[in-house]
Amino acid sequence: SFIQLSHDHIAENAAQGHVPYLDALASLRGCSIDSKLLFRQVLHENFNELFENHELNGEALSHRLEIVLNREPVLFDKCLLPAQSAYS
Image (tube, rainbow, N blue to C red; front, side, top):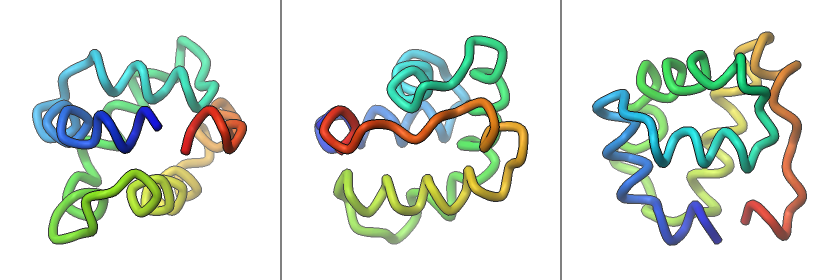
């Protein structure tokens, strides 16, 4: 999966607030274009919860990402849940 293969790049982008892998992840989630900046900010602000001292696998990160995004009403409405096969 994209998350499994790109875990380190996603973590690096989230830590620094950089774009490429975070935008790709947002696109896979079905986030609208106007919500990608907020998506990147939320991942950056929740870096510790998402990446620090956790299992380094895509499934675990996907689960933690769901928890974080479910707390953000704007993203919850603008980022559709992905098809399991495309995301995991």
